[in-house]
Image (cartoon, rainbow over all chains, first blue to last red):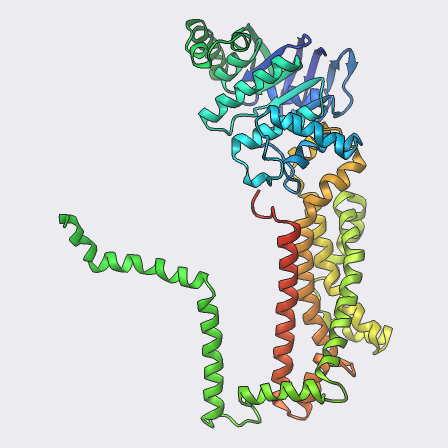
Length: 257
Length: 278
């Protein structure tokens, strides 16, 4: 159980007038699943990169469990949009990567990876090469690879954007199930409003120029899914639709302005 | 019959289906084999019709017969096998040397701007110069023995290997690197667990280009100063106007080049099966 804080964080990119992120503050409670949403250029991926340690803030602090982030680490695993799998490794090899980097013995790391692969529905695919996997399976493997690292925080950068609607929904359900079981803190960056509302306990709406947080909406559809309610019923719930329109209006109004 | 079916018989429609048939044949082995068979036939016809003197164009079967005698009895003090062994020995020696030095150098060039700044201009300076242009210099410096030849081939192989390896190192997708870092890979681990395997397809492409460049340089080198080798055999035969041995030598060179390239392609399929798939 790990908490995450942004404290007055600003980021500038060379050649751009105005900050990409302007004094952004945000706190994620342990076990929270927060979705960050906004038009392109609002800095949502930059927020994720800051937590991952891929880049550093110009000012302000990014802290995990009260300690400043100084670089990438296996305590903050990332799942990317274009899966970023390693093609020279098979499915099992990709899943064991983090454990191999940690120096875990082969027998042990393969047992760990097989267990996680089974959780994401990839049991039996261990020996497959990654170009033999479908888009949905590759994204499951991306998730499994991150989970084998047993990170305190799971960072998801538009992980399901490239999937077709049906596959996307099953992988969303899988993510909720895994989150429910593990209780990990999750930060999800997406441009899909339905996805954000369905998965997150809190949806953070951002606006561009300068990148800032303009709204935060609490939601409980993910928890209701875990409590047994059906996905379609939840996504057509009047409360869901009302919130969706509210977020949509907010994002559009800021994007047009 | 459907009323519109008659339209299929229109000449324009029939012609439109024609081009799709040819590529299917061309994609197979049929067309290349037919081309070579036609060439052989034309050669055979020209030689037997008495159009060209055998001095200039010996018949195919005469060249084949020569293959048997040169393989057995030899030509200018060495059998074909000995000539070939001399050529392959130089080639593979230089190639091994170029791989052993070029791959690490390429990795360093790709990883370090400092090394790149030093090595890049050197390679770009000599790479565009045809090896035959600096062969005389190599002979002046290193004599007419094996050293100058091996060095010449080495230089021809080195440039493509270094350039391709460096490109492979620099071409690692950022997401792939970041993914590995977020999975706990240290800087050292990134090198051998991500950057090296990621560069492998480029390295093998560099080896393939280098092998081709080296082989053509080798034959040229043997034309100038050698006592054994396929290139030397051709050169000696040409001086005595033994045209069938000249042709034989050319075929042997082509066959070896083809075989070496096939070996590298086999290695590519085995070692980097993901190339072009992801």
